[in-house]
Each structure stands twice: as C-alpha cells, then as structure tokens.
Amino acid sequence: MIAIFVFYLFATLVVLSGFMTIFARNPVHNVLWLILAFFNAAGLFLLLGAEFLAFLLVIVYVGAVAVLFLFVVMMLNIDFAELRAGISRYWAIGGVLAVVLLFETLAALLAWNEGGIQIAGRAPTPANVPNIEALGAILYTRYLFIFEAAGIVLLVAMVGAIVLTSRRRGGLRPQNVSKQNRRRPEEATVNMKPGVGQGVEL
Image (cartoon, rainbow, N blue to C red; front, side):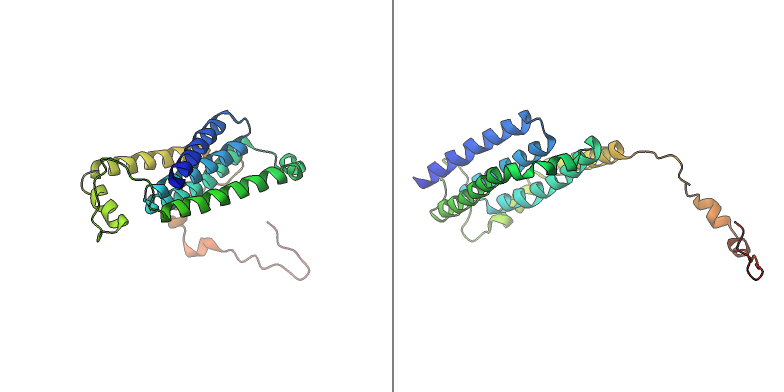
C-alpha cells in the first residue's frame, strides 16, 4: 500500500516539476525545478528496484545540470547582485523544499525495503545476477547500436555547445606555432646592457 502511495506522489511531483521547468520565466528557477524532477524520477527508479539507474540519474544528470546552469549564466549574463538582494525572502520556500526532498527520500527507501512495485510481464532476473551486471549484459548486446548512437548524439551536442559559447575577442595576440618553431636560440633573448641608473628601453 505504501509503495502505491509513494509511486503516485513521485509521479505527480515529476509531472508538476516538468511543467514548472517549462513555464518558469527565470532560468535559475528552470534549473531548480529540473533538479526536483530528476530527484523524483530517481525515486521512481528506486521503487522499480533499479537502484543503479536511480543513482546514475542523480549523479550524472544533477551533476550535468550544474554545467547547464553555468552555460545559462554565461550566455544570458544573469545579474547575481540582483538575485542575492532578495534571497532572504526565499529561505522559507527553500526550507520547505528541503524537507519535502528528505521526506521523499525516506519514503522511497522505506518502500524499496518493502519490496517495491511488482510489474506484470516483466522479464525475471536471476537471483544470483546483480542488477548492474544484468543491465550491462543487455545494454552491450541487445541495445548496443542504440547505446553507441546515443553516445554520438551526446558528442555532437557537446561540440555544438562549445561552438555556441566560443567567442572571438579583439586585441589578443594569437599564437603562431610555426613561427615559434622557426625561431633560433639567439633570437629568443636580447642583451640590452643598460648603463648605471638607466632603465631598459622597450
């Protein structure tokens, strides 16, 4: 009974967090709602007995959200001074969200210890095979092409993000590697031999 209640709790919060991620106007709030959606999705994975996917979702995606937050700040030039000016008004909301996340984590662990949710038609996993080993076996055999295609998509996305954020700056002296390699040792340093009390002329 508690597993069903926790499932609907997490599912509802995932949907609500997804809507708020889309409709929130502040980019920082978008990222925070997305983190909340990731945590609730990880709770759903715990209910299904897929603890590896749950921890992977929290570690990888929440960690990647920090990088996404960095790109948002770099591209939109958010004024942090203005954001910090009214941060004291949101301590109550932040405390409530922290308590809710703690309650959800404890509820997910309690429901997981009760046995999770049984899904009809799910292929049984042998008891002597760990969850990570079973996942790796099917990922690198049956879904190998899809796994490699996802890696290519992520590589293209990473290169695209680097290209979008790279900016040319004026007034910089570019590095000429071929010219540096052609330079002889006697041209690298010049002995000016300044006199007493005389500065070096540039």
